[in-house]
Image (cartoon, rainbow, N blue to C red; front, top):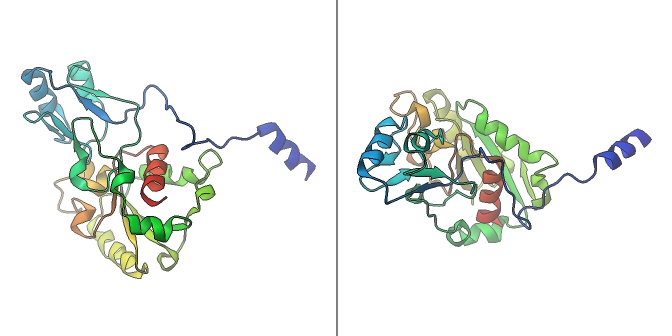
Length: 247
């Protein structure tokens, strides 16, 4: 017992103070992409043709964050003249079309479903479904339970059964073999309920887009309330999305 207390004293308080205090991520982090409209058409087309996800519209000079895996190819090719990635991790949206951006996003808090805030503002129970994910998105959701993020302090927890959940959090490209399990999980979740799509695989199919074995977008199966882009989304992106949308 004394050893445990000493270890607690030695470690100190490790939980971050977000959202009361702004968090700055490491310099290499790629967050909200910024499109420079004054870039030449030639550079824009070069970036669009090199994008592995076909996420860039060179004509309109916008990028689809739902498809983007934040690899940074466009930024390297244009040397930041056309696309540059900022450190802004607050990139989640409530409408899929908002993911197509030139670097500006509507406030998630302003577009949140107000009845969800009233229902789940003090207690939100989540059931996570890995629909053939690679475990990257799943891992960055799991760390929200660690002392640094401490998701439970906001009244948000992950539960083992969909019957105890208020919302389902889906990761992965939703393979054909996982489709039935996902739909049964949704049906088992009591209403009113929310659906959260996490990661580019879930939102658009990600690197597997075009395969007959996956579903290209969770919104084609279920009514999605919250889209969290990334490959994988940073834990702070997940935390911001949950707090802004439900709290």
